[in-house]
Length: 256
Length: 250
Image (cartoon, rainbow over all chains, first blue to last red; front, side, top):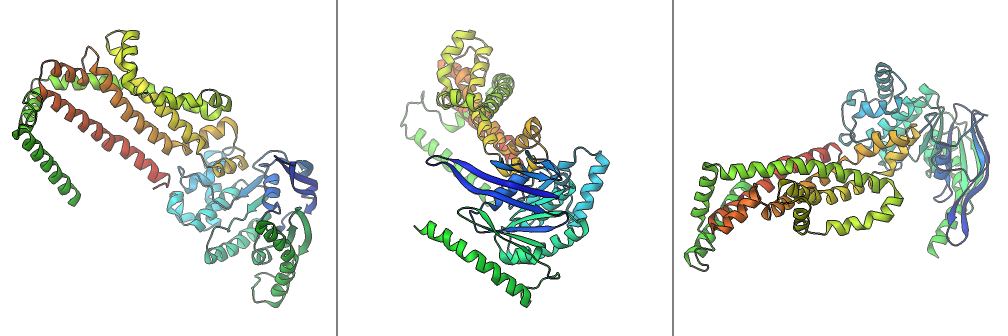
Protein backbone atom coordinates (compact mmCIF):
# COMPACT_ATOMS: atom_id res chain seq x y z
CA UNK A 1 0.00 0.00 0.00
CA UNK A 2 1.08 3.56 -0.70
CA UNK A 3 0.27 5.10 2.67
CA UNK A 4 -0.49 2.80 5.54
CA UNK A 5 -1.50 3.22 9.18
CA UNK A 6 -0.96 0.25 11.48
CA UNK A 7 -2.61 0.41 14.90
CA UNK A 8 -1.77 4.08 15.21
CA UNK A 9 -2.48 5.67 18.60
CA UNK A 10 -1.97 9.13 19.97
CA UNK A 11 -2.12 10.31 23.54
CA UNK A 12 -0.99 13.49 25.17
CA UNK A 13 0.33 13.71 28.71
CA UNK A 14 -2.41 14.83 31.07
CA UNK A 15 -2.03 16.23 34.58
CA UNK A 16 -4.82 14.28 36.28
CA UNK A 17 -5.14 11.02 34.36
CA UNK A 18 -1.53 10.60 33.34
CA UNK A 19 -2.40 10.46 29.66
CA UNK A 20 -5.21 11.67 27.48
CA UNK A 21 -5.93 9.45 24.52
CA UNK A 22 -6.96 11.18 21.32
CA UNK A 23 -7.47 7.97 19.34
CA UNK A 24 -6.14 4.45 19.32
CA UNK A 25 -5.67 1.59 16.87
CA UNK A 26 -6.28 3.51 13.69
CA UNK A 27 -5.83 1.19 10.70
CA UNK A 28 -6.01 2.63 7.25
CA UNK A 29 -4.59 2.09 3.77
CA UNK A 30 -4.53 4.81 1.18
CA UNK A 31 -3.85 4.27 -2.49
CA UNK A 32 -1.67 6.44 -4.67
CA UNK A 33 -3.33 9.28 -6.64
CA UNK A 34 -6.38 9.13 -4.41
CA UNK A 35 -8.09 12.20 -3.01
CA UNK A 36 -9.02 11.18 0.51
CA UNK A 37 -10.84 13.38 3.01
CA UNK A 38 -10.76 12.89 6.73
CA UNK A 39 -14.01 14.23 8.09
CA UNK A 40 -15.07 14.57 11.68
CA UNK A 41 -16.26 16.87 14.46
CA UNK A 42 -13.78 18.97 16.42
CA UNK A 43 -11.80 16.95 18.90
CA UNK A 44 -11.82 13.69 16.92
CA UNK A 45 -8.10 14.02 16.26
CA UNK A 46 -8.24 14.41 12.48
CA UNK A 47 -5.74 17.28 12.43
CA UNK A 48 -3.51 15.45 14.89
CA UNK A 49 -3.53 12.43 12.61
CA UNK A 50 -2.48 14.61 9.68
CA UNK A 51 0.30 16.24 11.73
CA UNK A 52 1.54 12.76 12.58
CA UNK A 53 1.85 11.91 8.89
CA UNK A 54 3.70 15.19 8.42
CA UNK A 55 6.03 14.21 11.25
CA UNK A 56 5.13 17.28 13.29
CA UNK A 57 3.49 15.17 16.00
CA UNK A 58 5.03 12.06 17.47
CA UNK A 59 3.31 8.70 17.07
CA UNK A 60 2.48 7.26 20.48
CA UNK A 61 1.93 3.70 19.26
CA UNK A 62 1.83 1.85 15.95
CA UNK A 63 3.39 3.14 12.77
CA UNK A 64 2.69 5.09 9.63
CA UNK A 65 4.33 3.84 6.45
CA UNK A 66 4.76 5.87 3.28
CA UNK A 67 5.86 3.56 0.47
CA UNK A 68 6.92 1.07 3.16
CA UNK A 69 9.13 3.64 4.89
CA UNK A 70 8.12 4.50 8.47
CA UNK A 71 7.42 8.16 9.06
CA UNK A 72 9.14 9.75 12.04
CA UNK A 73 10.15 13.32 11.35
CA UNK A 74 9.08 16.00 8.86
CA UNK A 75 10.44 15.78 5.35
CA UNK A 76 9.91 17.20 1.89
CA UNK A 77 8.30 13.96 0.69
CA UNK A 78 5.18 15.12 2.53
CA UNK A 79 3.94 18.58 1.63
CA UNK A 80 1.56 20.29 3.98
CA UNK A 81 -0.90 23.15 3.56
CA UNK A 82 -2.26 24.63 6.78
CA UNK A 83 -5.39 26.62 7.52
CA UNK A 84 -3.15 29.68 7.74
CA UNK A 85 -1.08 30.08 4.56
CA UNK A 86 2.10 30.54 6.68
CA UNK A 87 3.90 32.34 3.86
CA UNK A 88 7.08 34.13 4.86
CA UNK A 89 6.36 37.87 4.77
CA UNK A 90 9.98 38.82 4.06
CA UNK A 91 10.00 36.86 0.81
CA UNK A 92 8.03 37.64 -2.32
CA UNK A 93 5.71 35.08 -3.87
CA UNK A 94 8.37 33.54 -6.12
CA UNK A 95 10.92 33.34 -3.30
CA UNK A 96 8.32 31.73 -1.04
CA UNK A 97 7.68 28.97 -3.56
CA UNK A 98 11.43 28.56 -4.11
CA UNK A 99 12.01 28.22 -0.36
CA UNK A 100 11.82 24.40 -0.18
CA UNK A 101 13.81 23.90 -3.40
CA UNK A 102 17.30 24.54 -2.09
CA UNK A 103 18.53 21.17 -3.39
CA UNK A 104 17.99 22.37 -6.97
CA UNK A 105 20.17 24.73 -9.01
CA UNK A 106 19.15 28.40 -9.09
CA UNK A 107 17.78 28.03 -12.57
CA UNK A 108 15.78 24.90 -11.79
CA UNK A 109 14.41 26.56 -8.67
CA UNK A 110 13.05 29.43 -10.73
CA UNK A 111 11.55 27.25 -13.47
CA UNK A 112 9.96 24.87 -10.97
CA UNK A 113 8.51 27.67 -8.86
CA UNK A 114 7.17 29.43 -11.93
CA UNK A 115 5.60 26.24 -13.21
CA UNK A 116 3.61 25.74 -10.02
CA UNK A 117 2.69 29.40 -9.73
CA UNK A 118 1.30 29.14 -13.22
CA UNK A 119 -0.63 26.07 -12.14
CA UNK A 120 -2.37 28.10 -9.41
CA UNK A 121 -2.84 31.02 -11.83
CA UNK A 122 -0.55 33.43 -10.01
CA UNK A 123 2.10 34.02 -12.66
CA UNK A 124 1.38 37.72 -12.62
CA UNK A 125 2.09 38.02 -8.90
CA UNK A 126 5.54 36.47 -8.62
CA UNK A 127 7.07 39.72 -7.39
CA UNK A 128 4.29 40.59 -4.92
CA UNK A 129 4.66 40.22 -1.20
CA UNK A 130 2.23 38.02 0.76
CA UNK A 131 0.48 40.91 2.52
CA UNK A 132 -0.39 42.39 -0.85
CA UNK A 133 -2.45 39.31 -1.77
CA UNK A 134 -5.96 38.28 -0.72
CA UNK A 135 -6.45 35.32 1.62
CA UNK A 136 -7.43 33.04 -1.26
CA UNK A 137 -4.39 34.03 -3.30
CA UNK A 138 -2.12 33.46 -0.30
CA UNK A 139 -3.53 29.98 0.11
CA UNK A 140 -2.90 29.28 -3.58
CA UNK A 141 0.74 30.31 -3.09
CA UNK A 142 0.91 27.93 -0.13
CA UNK A 143 -0.45 25.13 -2.33
CA UNK A 144 2.08 25.95 -5.07
CA UNK A 145 4.86 25.94 -2.45
CA UNK A 146 3.84 22.51 -1.16
CA UNK A 147 3.47 21.07 -4.66
CA UNK A 148 6.79 22.50 -5.86
CA UNK A 149 8.61 20.06 -3.57
CA UNK A 150 6.94 17.30 -5.60
CA UNK A 151 5.91 15.45 -2.42
CA UNK A 152 4.62 11.89 -2.44
CA UNK A 153 1.56 13.03 -0.59
CA UNK A 154 -0.07 16.42 -0.13
CA UNK A 155 -1.50 16.95 3.35
CA UNK A 156 -4.13 19.65 3.67
CA UNK A 157 -5.37 20.71 7.11
CA UNK A 158 -8.66 22.56 6.64
CA UNK A 159 -6.92 24.69 4.01
CA UNK A 160 -10.01 26.66 3.02
CA UNK A 161 -11.50 26.95 6.50
CA UNK A 162 -10.55 30.59 6.95
CA UNK A 163 -11.82 31.75 3.56
CA UNK A 164 -15.17 33.19 2.58
CA UNK A 165 -17.74 30.97 0.87
CA UNK A 166 -17.21 32.18 -2.71
CA UNK A 167 -13.42 32.02 -2.55
CA UNK A 168 -13.71 28.57 -1.08
CA UNK A 169 -15.79 27.34 -4.03
CA UNK A 170 -13.35 28.80 -6.52
CA UNK A 171 -10.46 27.11 -4.73
CA UNK A 172 -12.31 23.78 -4.66
CA UNK A 173 -12.48 23.86 -8.45
CA UNK A 174 -8.85 24.97 -8.69
CA UNK A 175 -7.73 22.19 -6.40
CA UNK A 176 -9.60 19.55 -8.41
CA UNK A 177 -8.09 20.87 -11.63
CA UNK A 178 -4.58 20.86 -10.12
CA UNK A 179 -5.12 17.38 -8.75
CA UNK A 180 -6.20 16.11 -12.17
CA UNK A 181 -3.07 17.66 -13.71
CA UNK A 182 -0.61 16.67 -11.01
CA UNK A 183 -2.09 13.34 -9.90
CA UNK A 184 -0.94 13.81 -6.32
CA UNK A 185 -2.16 11.70 -3.46
CA UNK A 186 -4.09 14.15 -1.31
CA UNK A 187 -5.16 13.81 2.30
CA UNK A 188 -7.63 16.52 3.10
CA UNK A 189 -8.83 17.24 6.62
CA UNK A 190 -12.14 19.06 6.93
CA UNK A 191 -15.21 19.33 9.11
CA UNK A 192 -17.41 20.30 6.17
CA UNK A 193 -19.50 17.42 4.86
CA UNK A 194 -20.29 19.11 1.55
CA UNK A 195 -16.63 19.98 1.00
CA UNK A 196 -15.59 16.37 1.57
CA UNK A 197 -18.25 15.03 -0.80
CA UNK A 198 -17.51 17.60 -3.49
CA UNK A 199 -13.79 16.85 -3.59
CA UNK A 200 -12.93 13.31 -2.56
CA UNK A 201 -12.72 9.80 -3.94
CA UNK A 202 -13.01 8.52 -0.45
CA UNK A 203 -14.10 9.90 2.91
CA UNK A 204 -12.83 8.61 6.22
CA UNK A 205 -15.47 9.63 8.77
CA UNK A 206 -14.11 9.95 12.28
CA UNK A 207 -15.99 10.01 15.56
CA UNK A 208 -14.94 11.51 18.85
CA UNK A 209 -14.52 10.58 22.54
CA UNK A 210 -12.72 8.35 21.83
CA UNK A 211 -11.44 9.30 18.39
CA UNK A 212 -11.99 6.48 15.91
CA UNK A 213 -12.95 5.74 12.34
CA UNK A 214 -16.70 5.23 12.12
CA UNK A 215 -17.03 4.81 8.39
CA UNK A 216 -14.93 4.51 5.28
CA UNK A 217 -16.89 5.76 2.27
CA UNK A 218 -16.00 5.54 -1.39
CA UNK A 219 -17.50 8.14 -3.67
CA UNK A 220 -17.79 7.21 -7.29
CA UNK A 221 -20.16 9.99 -8.34
CA UNK A 222 -18.87 11.78 -11.45
CA UNK A 223 -17.29 15.21 -11.00
CA UNK A 224 -18.18 18.04 -10.95
CA UNK A 225 -20.54 17.23 -8.14
CA UNK A 226 -23.31 19.75 -7.78
CA UNK A 227 -24.94 20.17 -4.39
CA UNK A 228 -28.43 19.89 -5.91
CA UNK A 229 -27.75 16.48 -7.45
CA UNK A 230 -29.95 13.88 -5.76
CA UNK A 231 -27.07 11.43 -5.24
CA UNK A 232 -25.01 14.15 -3.60
CA UNK A 233 -27.93 15.07 -1.36
CA UNK A 234 -28.44 11.44 -0.38
CA UNK A 235 -24.77 11.09 0.46
CA UNK A 236 -24.75 14.29 2.50
CA UNK A 237 -27.71 13.05 4.51
CA UNK A 238 -26.05 9.73 5.10
CA UNK A 239 -22.88 11.34 6.45
CA UNK A 240 -24.90 13.84 8.45
CA UNK A 241 -26.66 10.89 10.09
CA UNK A 242 -23.31 9.36 10.97
CA UNK A 243 -22.02 12.53 12.54
CA UNK A 244 -25.14 13.67 14.34
CA UNK A 245 -24.57 11.45 17.34
CA UNK A 246 -20.93 12.50 17.48
CA UNK A 247 -21.68 16.19 17.36
CA UNK A 248 -24.31 15.79 20.09
CA UNK A 249 -21.71 14.05 22.21
CA UNK A 250 -19.39 17.04 21.89
CA UNK A 251 -22.18 19.50 22.59
CA UNK A 252 -23.35 17.63 25.67
CA UNK A 253 -19.85 17.60 27.10
CA UNK A 254 -19.31 21.27 26.39
CA UNK A 255 -22.60 22.30 27.94
CA UNK A 256 -22.08 20.31 31.12
CA UNK B 1 0.38 70.86 6.25
CA UNK B 2 -2.34 71.52 8.79
CA UNK B 3 -0.44 69.46 11.37
CA UNK B 4 2.73 71.43 10.73
CA UNK B 5 0.85 74.70 11.22
CA UNK B 6 -0.62 73.48 14.51
CA UNK B 7 2.82 72.47 15.73
CA UNK B 8 4.37 75.81 14.79
CA UNK B 9 1.57 77.74 16.49
CA UNK B 10 2.02 75.63 19.61
CA UNK B 11 5.75 76.34 19.64
CA UNK B 12 5.14 80.07 19.24
CA UNK B 13 2.69 79.95 22.15
CA UNK B 14 5.22 78.15 24.36
CA UNK B 15 7.93 80.70 23.54
CA UNK B 16 5.49 83.54 24.26
CA UNK B 17 4.61 81.98 27.62
CA UNK B 18 8.29 81.56 28.36
CA UNK B 19 8.90 85.24 27.58
CA UNK B 20 5.89 86.12 29.74
CA UNK B 21 7.21 84.22 32.74
CA UNK B 22 10.58 85.90 32.28
CA UNK B 23 9.10 89.38 31.98
CA UNK B 24 6.93 88.84 35.04
CA UNK B 25 10.11 88.16 37.00
CA UNK B 26 8.90 84.90 38.58
CA UNK B 27 12.46 83.55 38.76
CA UNK B 28 15.70 85.53 39.20
CA UNK B 29 17.52 86.34 35.95
CA UNK B 30 20.44 84.13 36.85
CA UNK B 31 18.18 81.05 36.95
CA UNK B 32 15.80 81.77 34.10
CA UNK B 33 16.93 83.22 30.75
CA UNK B 34 14.67 84.86 28.17
CA UNK B 35 14.20 82.98 24.85
CA UNK B 36 16.35 85.46 22.95
CA UNK B 37 19.38 84.86 25.21
CA UNK B 38 19.12 81.13 24.55
CA UNK B 39 18.96 81.84 20.84
CA UNK B 40 22.14 83.94 21.07
CA UNK B 41 23.82 81.22 23.13
CA UNK B 42 23.07 78.74 20.35
CA UNK B 43 24.44 81.10 17.68
CA UNK B 44 27.54 81.74 19.76
CA UNK B 45 28.10 78.07 20.59
CA UNK B 46 27.87 76.91 17.01
CA UNK B 47 29.68 80.02 15.80
CA UNK B 48 32.83 79.50 17.85
CA UNK B 49 32.60 75.73 17.45
CA UNK B 50 32.36 74.77 21.13
CA UNK B 51 28.92 73.20 20.79
CA UNK B 52 29.86 71.56 17.49
CA UNK B 53 32.91 69.99 19.10
CA UNK B 54 30.91 68.81 22.09
CA UNK B 55 28.28 67.36 19.78
CA UNK B 56 30.85 65.49 17.72
CA UNK B 57 32.44 64.08 20.88
CA UNK B 58 29.02 62.86 22.04
CA UNK B 59 28.37 61.20 18.71
CA UNK B 60 31.75 59.53 18.91
CA UNK B 61 30.80 57.98 22.26
CA UNK B 62 27.57 56.73 20.75
CA UNK B 63 29.33 55.41 17.68
CA UNK B 64 31.44 53.18 19.91
CA UNK B 65 28.84 52.36 22.53
CA UNK B 66 25.63 51.75 20.61
CA UNK B 67 26.90 49.05 18.21
CA UNK B 68 28.52 47.21 21.11
CA UNK B 69 25.31 47.36 23.14
CA UNK B 70 23.29 46.12 20.14
CA UNK B 71 25.62 43.20 19.43
CA UNK B 72 25.94 42.28 23.10
CA UNK B 73 22.22 42.69 23.77
CA UNK B 74 21.32 40.60 20.75
CA UNK B 75 23.64 37.80 21.84
CA UNK B 76 22.17 37.76 25.34
CA UNK B 77 18.65 37.84 23.90
CA UNK B 78 19.32 34.94 21.53
CA UNK B 79 20.83 32.91 24.35
CA UNK B 80 17.83 33.52 26.61
CA UNK B 81 15.30 32.80 23.88
CA UNK B 82 16.99 29.60 22.77
CA UNK B 83 18.10 28.10 26.06
CA UNK B 84 15.39 27.42 28.59
CA UNK B 85 18.13 26.73 31.11
CA UNK B 86 19.67 30.18 30.62
CA UNK B 87 16.32 31.93 30.69
CA UNK B 88 15.19 30.26 33.90
CA UNK B 89 18.50 31.09 35.54
CA UNK B 90 19.16 34.63 34.36
CA UNK B 91 16.02 35.86 32.59
CA UNK B 92 14.38 37.66 35.49
CA UNK B 93 17.54 39.57 36.42
CA UNK B 94 17.44 41.20 33.02
CA UNK B 95 14.30 43.12 33.97
CA UNK B 96 15.89 44.09 37.27
CA UNK B 97 18.93 45.41 35.42
CA UNK B 98 16.77 47.21 32.89
CA UNK B 99 14.98 49.02 35.71
CA UNK B 100 18.18 50.65 36.96
CA UNK B 101 18.42 54.22 35.61
CA UNK B 102 21.64 54.59 33.65
CA UNK B 103 22.86 57.50 35.77
CA UNK B 104 23.18 55.03 38.65
CA UNK B 105 25.97 53.28 36.74
CA UNK B 106 28.02 56.46 36.25
CA UNK B 107 29.90 56.57 39.58
CA UNK B 108 30.79 52.90 39.26
CA UNK B 109 31.94 53.39 35.70
CA UNK B 110 34.12 56.37 36.71
CA UNK B 111 35.75 54.29 39.42
CA UNK B 112 36.30 51.38 37.05
CA UNK B 113 37.68 53.29 34.09
CA UNK B 114 38.70 56.65 35.54
CA UNK B 115 37.66 60.08 34.31
CA UNK B 116 37.94 59.34 30.61
CA UNK B 117 35.81 58.64 27.58
CA UNK B 118 35.88 54.90 28.18
CA UNK B 119 33.78 55.47 31.30
CA UNK B 120 31.17 57.30 29.22
CA UNK B 121 31.16 54.59 26.56
CA UNK B 122 30.64 51.97 29.23
CA UNK B 123 27.55 53.79 30.50
CA UNK B 124 26.24 54.02 26.92
CA UNK B 125 26.70 50.26 26.47
CA UNK B 126 24.95 49.48 29.76
CA UNK B 127 22.18 51.91 28.80
CA UNK B 128 21.21 50.05 25.63
CA UNK B 129 22.18 46.47 26.24
CA UNK B 130 19.33 45.28 28.46
CA UNK B 131 16.49 46.70 26.42
CA UNK B 132 18.11 45.20 23.34
CA UNK B 133 18.38 41.80 25.03
CA UNK B 134 14.75 41.91 26.20
CA UNK B 135 13.49 42.82 22.74
CA UNK B 136 15.58 40.20 21.00
CA UNK B 137 14.23 37.59 23.38
CA UNK B 138 10.64 38.72 22.75
CA UNK B 139 11.28 38.87 19.01
CA UNK B 140 12.45 35.27 18.83
CA UNK B 141 9.74 34.01 21.13
CA UNK B 142 7.04 35.66 19.06
CA UNK B 143 7.98 33.98 15.80
CA UNK B 144 4.65 32.44 14.74
CA UNK B 145 4.73 28.69 15.26
CA UNK B 146 2.99 28.32 11.90
CA UNK B 147 6.17 29.58 10.20
CA UNK B 148 8.29 27.05 12.03
CA UNK B 149 5.87 24.22 11.34
CA UNK B 150 5.64 25.10 7.67
CA UNK B 151 9.42 25.28 7.38
CA UNK B 152 9.82 21.92 9.09
CA UNK B 153 7.43 20.26 6.65
CA UNK B 154 9.71 21.63 3.93
CA UNK B 155 12.66 19.82 5.46
CA UNK B 156 14.20 22.84 7.16
CA UNK B 157 15.28 22.47 10.78
CA UNK B 158 18.03 23.17 13.30
CA UNK B 159 20.42 25.99 12.47
CA UNK B 160 18.95 26.41 9.02
CA UNK B 161 15.53 26.97 10.57
CA UNK B 162 17.05 29.54 12.91
CA UNK B 163 18.83 31.53 10.22
CA UNK B 164 16.30 31.20 7.42
CA UNK B 165 13.06 31.53 9.36
CA UNK B 166 13.41 32.59 12.98
CA UNK B 167 15.83 35.46 12.39
CA UNK B 168 14.01 37.06 9.46
CA UNK B 169 10.66 36.52 11.21
CA UNK B 170 11.88 38.39 14.27
CA UNK B 171 13.23 41.41 12.41
CA UNK B 172 10.27 43.72 13.24
CA UNK B 173 10.61 43.26 17.02
CA UNK B 174 14.35 43.44 16.62
CA UNK B 175 14.03 46.85 14.93
CA UNK B 176 11.95 48.04 17.87
CA UNK B 177 14.80 46.84 20.08
CA UNK B 178 17.32 48.88 18.12
CA UNK B 179 15.15 51.98 18.28
CA UNK B 180 14.75 51.63 22.04
CA UNK B 181 18.44 50.84 22.49
CA UNK B 182 19.21 54.12 20.72
CA UNK B 183 16.77 56.03 22.93
CA UNK B 184 18.14 54.53 26.13
CA UNK B 185 21.75 54.93 25.03
CA UNK B 186 21.19 58.56 24.21
CA UNK B 187 19.85 59.20 27.71
CA UNK B 188 22.68 57.18 29.24
CA UNK B 189 25.18 59.15 27.18
CA UNK B 190 23.97 62.44 28.62
CA UNK B 191 23.99 61.02 32.15
CA UNK B 192 27.52 59.71 31.69
CA UNK B 193 28.87 62.91 30.19
CA UNK B 194 27.25 65.06 32.84
CA UNK B 195 29.62 63.68 35.47
CA UNK B 196 32.58 63.15 33.17
CA UNK B 197 35.59 65.30 32.40
CA UNK B 198 34.51 65.90 28.82
CA UNK B 199 34.38 66.47 26.02
CA UNK B 200 30.71 65.98 25.19
CA UNK B 201 27.35 67.68 25.22
CA UNK B 202 26.57 66.54 28.77
CA UNK B 203 29.92 67.83 29.98
CA UNK B 204 29.28 71.22 28.31
CA UNK B 205 26.02 71.33 30.24
CA UNK B 206 27.76 70.91 33.61
CA UNK B 207 30.44 73.35 32.49
CA UNK B 208 27.86 76.00 31.65
CA UNK B 209 26.18 75.35 34.97
CA UNK B 210 29.48 75.85 36.82
CA UNK B 211 29.89 79.21 35.15
CA UNK B 212 26.27 80.18 35.76
CA UNK B 213 25.56 80.39 32.03
CA UNK B 214 21.89 79.44 32.28
CA UNK B 215 21.32 80.50 28.67
CA UNK B 216 23.83 77.86 27.53
CA UNK B 217 22.26 75.29 29.88
CA UNK B 218 18.90 75.89 28.23
CA UNK B 219 20.45 75.83 24.77
CA UNK B 220 22.03 72.42 25.40
CA UNK B 221 18.79 71.00 26.80
CA UNK B 222 17.14 72.09 23.55
CA UNK B 223 19.88 70.45 21.46
CA UNK B 224 19.58 67.16 23.37
CA UNK B 225 15.82 67.06 22.79
CA UNK B 226 16.02 68.05 19.15
CA UNK B 227 18.69 65.50 18.32
CA UNK B 228 17.01 62.74 20.28
CA UNK B 229 13.71 63.18 18.48
CA UNK B 230 15.23 63.91 15.05
CA UNK B 231 17.36 60.78 15.00
CA UNK B 232 14.44 58.71 16.25
CA UNK B 233 12.13 60.20 13.65
CA UNK B 234 14.46 60.25 10.65
CA UNK B 235 16.37 57.04 11.25
CA UNK B 236 14.95 54.51 13.67
CA UNK B 237 11.19 55.07 13.44
CA UNK B 238 11.46 55.20 9.69
CA UNK B 239 13.47 51.97 9.59
CA UNK B 240 11.01 50.28 11.92
CA UNK B 241 8.00 51.40 9.87
CA UNK B 242 9.58 50.26 6.61
CA UNK B 243 10.19 46.82 8.08
CA UNK B 244 6.71 46.60 9.62
CA UNK B 245 5.14 47.49 6.31
CA UNK B 246 7.18 44.99 4.38
CA UNK B 247 6.36 42.27 6.94
CA UNK B 248 2.68 43.11 6.52
CA UNK B 249 2.27 44.25 10.12
CA UNK B 250 1.02 47.76 9.40
